[in-house]
Length: 120
Image 1 (cartoon, one colour):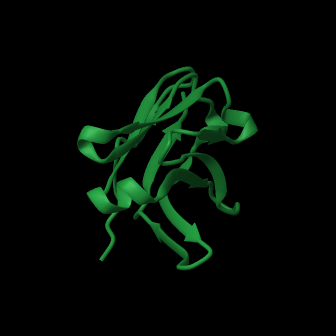
Image 2: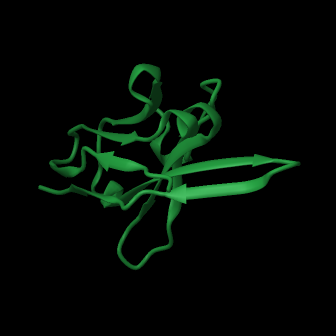
């Protein structure tokens, strides 16, 4: 059973920072592209950022320059550093791991979610 264990959510004032972490098994970490999605109340889940096994990162436009995703090889963990947080960043953040190739097809897993709240 694939496990994605998220941590680091919480409440912060606008302009503040939080760091989310997603820990997984060594095999998942080595092979899967891992990233973060978020879902605000009444809205659809949306892509935030992800990073490939060769450290190629991608970001949703609204978080570029504020969020940084990185891989910690020693801990098989993907971190999302979130700076200059805004109220509109408030959401449940989900870790996602996906693997796809032409032979095996696609395999995808989700974490349980962690709440991020940005308010005064």
